[in-house]
Image (cartoon, rainbow, N blue to C red; front, top):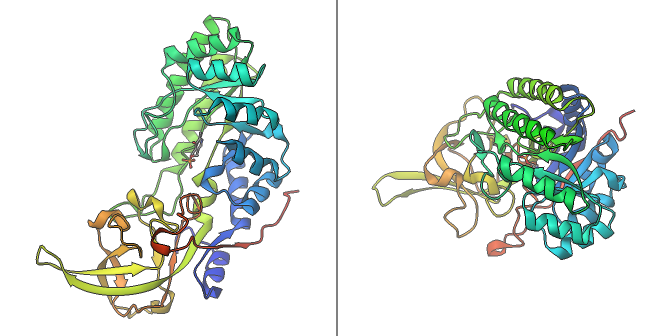
Length: 396
Ligand SMILES: *Cc1c(COP(=O)(O)O)cnc(C)c1O
């Protein structure tokens, strides 16, 4: 069972009710391997990927800080006990009131990408440090994030100069290569952009102290929309990042620090849902074709929101024998919404022909963006409750 360890499998096997299991030891191990890959880079976990108190506390104990996107996330981050200097306000979108609330909570580092936002930060968080987000193309990512955030290289220079003029400290640049970025080229292109802007800023006497590499590091265990393993080239990606950082250090001179804001990379493969089969049925479609449909207790609105771009590996533990007969089926969640189906109905997954109502199903690699995207009760289907496999605590 690729990318899902024995500990997590044992917890799924022991579960008798639907639940989302997070493996804290696995998340801690993932954090440690990120530190080995990118030594010296400070981690700011993107909270929206897993806003679960115990997960946040485990990461804080390992030394992570947080990328928060609202005053409520900032409060949740502070509650882990992490020093407030390790939390930044990474959302370029914020109201005057949000900025003032964050400042009162002790936040001094703010992302920005526009002049009106800089003016607001200067008014409501006087003297704060700002880092400017550059837009990236998002090419090569499952979710590009390319239009809503970030500005051009030219505007970044104007934004940081305006920050300086307004009494703020222009402190960094940030990017996001797109979520579940599948290519090393996207990282190389992004480092090209960063290098160009650093050179231009240097020419204008603006020396920044950090570059924030954002999110986008991929999870390993997903299937694509056709049901094939995504298999991101993780080693190539890390190599591109290490080379890119060296290049930026050469451009900017000594003293440039790096942050990274992984979300799904730290948690996706260390969470899994124990769900159950509602029904395996076969219906003649309007096309005249007879098609099997597997309906599960869990779907787009209670844990599997990202099924727009990917599919999750399924395990049917009560049909694990070598002689199991499979039928190709569309996999779908329980609601009366036609989007609540894997890959929008154009793909079939192998499903045990004998699957029956109540059979357990394990849905792997859904530790990221599961809790944050659950509805309160679409069609009366409640959020799936979570349970935790304990971690090892502080890494000493
Ligand atoms: C969501 C987000 C991240 C995390 O993205 P992943 O693709 O999950 O790694 C990082 N930084 C910012 C600003 C984000 O909005």
